[in-house]
Amino acid sequence: MAAVLMAATLGGCAQSSQENGQSQEKEEPLKVAMDLKFPPFTGTDENGDPAGLEVDIAYALGEYLDREIEIVNTDFSMLITSMETGEADVVISDMTIKEERKEKVDFSEPYLYGRTRALVNKDFAEKSHVTNEMALEEFFGIEGERVVGLAGTISVSVPQSYGVEVEEVTEIASALMEINQNTADVLVGANTILGDHAANADTTIVYEGIKEYSQSAMAVKKGNTELLEQLNSFVEFMYEDGGFYMEAGDKYDQAIGEYLQDESKGLEYMIYPPEGGVPEV
Image 1 (cartoon, rainbow, N blue to C red):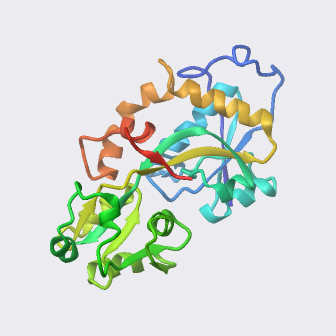
Image 2 (cartoon, rainbow, N blue to C red; image 1 turned 90 degrees about the vertical axis):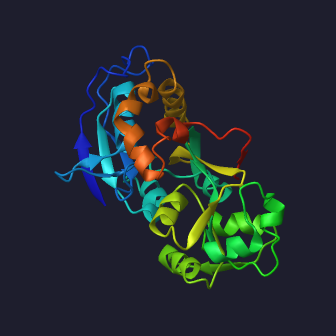
């Protein structure tokens, strides 16, 4: 794990520590764990420094709490462990709220939302007349449908919730290869499905009839009520006039549009739940 210490300057979207009810005494840096491999959310700039939407969120949190922020670069699989061992105080890394994770951590209110989609083999879609207007039960009920998914993710849990048998793989590249080579028909995923389709437009389509959406939240060690309350207050402030989200669109709208392979969509698309959607559990 690598740590980067950054001083959160007061100003911008920050409020004074007195306004937030925080102690005027100097506190230790807040250690924020994130996996710096997923731009435009978490990554590094040309100098190797942490950069991205969630990096900026972490620094804005530091301003809000009047605390220095220490970014702890941590593999996603070790994020929760980093809090258990004391190497981090909070996780800000597009971590979705899951019941099994709730057994180990406490989640803040959500601050990012991900749509659920399906990457479908083009030949299968044409033969089965798959369109976005097709009811979800009908989509998952197509006779002979072969569904592949990455173990431990929504690409397995969502189809299974509709009674579908899923071939589980341990590498997403294997699942994508099966879709492209017509040895599997359907792969469920989140926003990255759009990029997967863009890279394989000749062999795939995207089905957007799935209502479930994911909610990403900040996580703290279970029982850390004080920090959790501070995070919830910050998330609420992010959405207010003058808050982080109201000022971040100019910086991230283009990057989000490129990430989603749709220039008409920007930051706002990621920070509100879809109308009529159903939150995953």
